[in-house]
Amino acid sequence: MSTSMTPPPPRENGAGQVALKERREVPAAPPGVPQSPLEAASRRSRWGVALIIVVALLWTLVPLVWMLLSSFKNRKDVTAATPQVAFAPTLQNYRNLFTGSNNLTPYIWHSVLAAGISAVLAVGLGALAGYGLARTQMHGKRHLAFWIISTRMAPIAAVVVPLFLIFRGLGLIDSIPGLVLAYLTFNLPFAIWLMSAFFADVPPSLEESALVSGCTRWQAFRTVVLPLTKSGLVTTFVLCLVFAWNDYAFAVVFSGPNSQTLPIAASQLVTQTGIDWGQLTAIGTIVVVPMMLAGLAVRRWLVTGLTLGAVTGE
Image 1: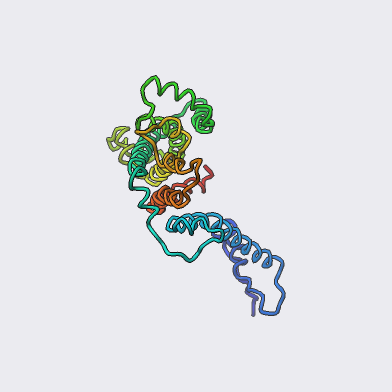
Image 2: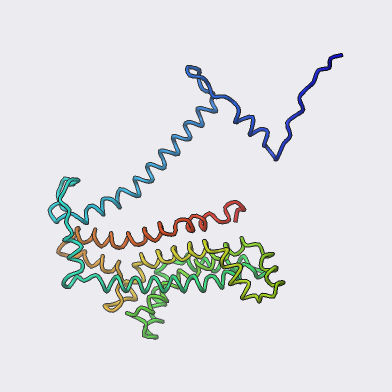
């Protein structure tokens, strides 16, 4: 006696697994057969994404490449009516930046000190405040977090005059500490807000296990939480460093002959008698390249930190 055997229904390993498997096993249309509307839409979307990426890369890279090439041109090639692609490279623009009255070394040193110290302080203080904000349970916690980041949203023109009066009374005008404090006014709220999101992603059970093992709250924070948020620390440091390094508004108000930074040096090349485009592109390259190299050096932690919380929707 023969019985018809029907294959058992496929088991689902998760929601939508069978449907996904069936969609993957649908063979592509053979050559000469018109594509289905779904395949045509998918192909158009891929071409559209590729086109957007190409346009974004051209929009970003072409000005940077042109600035780099122009920094190696002489005055005649830079100011030529027809853009010169083939030219004899020269380092004269860079030599002029570090010789005579246009010595750029003090400006670079001031930028490194002001931006570096403010970024380190912002990350250190932001990590402590962000950890407290992430672990403290209190009424109005979300309002407090929004108030902290809202201070970063304030326009610079609204805080320049009060800060100038305070710094003048404290003798901080034309000093590196004054620039560091000025940069902290917009770096610290950003660091607190960003680090609180990173700490909130760390399960509290890990700290509780450390506390049960005999660690103090500070030891649990230092040995358990901080290593797990290394990508967040690196991301926050790099972003704060870039913000301070590129700042012009605070530097032009609070700095002086003893504390002027690279953006101020670049603005001094634009005079009433003309613009030295060769030196301007050279100093622009000096400003841009260190931050690009810093971003590339820590890109692994930077990408991880910027995407942290994307899955959970935080």
